[in-house]
Length: 70
Image (cartoon, rainbow, N blue to C red):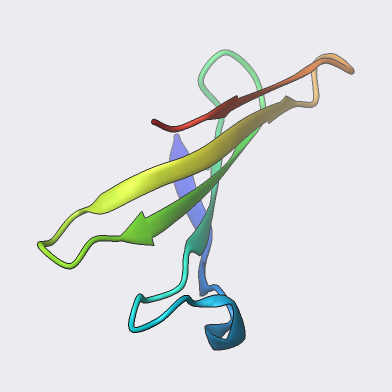
């Protein structure tokens, strides 16, 4: 099961120039145990999004992983 918990606009004051600010997407997944994925994405002018960073948090361990988009 995958559930989108939130898709919040990044504060406009952090946007640079005419760019839309990055957005934070929180996704909960039960695949392989309860896992929460946090992703920050920036919308592109030509459509689509660019992944800025992401993190994976699991309640089954104290470990967490983070990676940056590119």
